[in-house]
Image 1 (cartoon, one colour):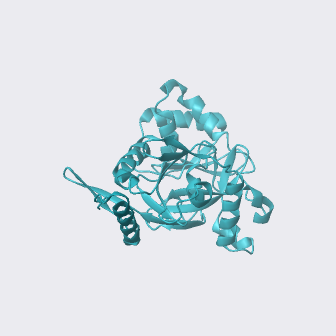
Image 2 (image 1 turned 135 degrees about the vertical axis):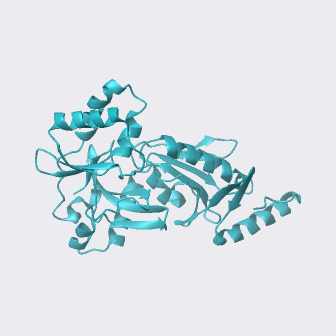
Length: 310
């Protein structure tokens, strides 16, 4: 059963090699905890803890957490991160119904959690870019809901997805997505409970009045959600918001996506932005065309000026 602390829910996001000092600090921490490494995979490591439970450790998120801290502090920080996993999270519940009130949704890159051995249930939001998984939340850690657990519950994945969204809604108070830049209208989720990015799934509930045109949304990391309600004025800010997402994605732990998305009525679309030399080219999805037409019409009705063009 894959399990991770709130401070270390790594997706096994990989690619780069890590400095020897980081790997030495990790080995020291594993020795302190008496965790036995069984398989090193470059961007993750499989271990067995003293209880005989398997632990999957994603390295990228931990390295991003540590790299700004003094290197002499890394072993202790790693011990604290790894020991935050509670015993409950390491043991699958016998019945998913018993932990129904602890279920929440966690966003992830589409390629995350694809290891067949992990068997994690997920639902695509934007094919090839973004997906949603279910987690069981514990006081200091969480664990992923697997396909096996869904099958054993006698309910489908959609049932548990809706239940997890309802739980997230219950802990998302009005105003939790707040204005952070009056001039642009930029909004940000500010709860800080490890589910801020997931609140993008509740936009019509939490930021009312934008059902017709929807929102520009970025989820660069687990604890980062930026929202820009779409208007004639904010349409031209899409490249700016995409640039913020890209920078945050590269620098912060628990990365999800550097992309810009258009979300309306709970349906997600990639809103592609590319650079052609010195020019920025916006390539909205086909379904966005009526929004552009409506914004043009509204601008023409107001002052006759030429509206934003893409």
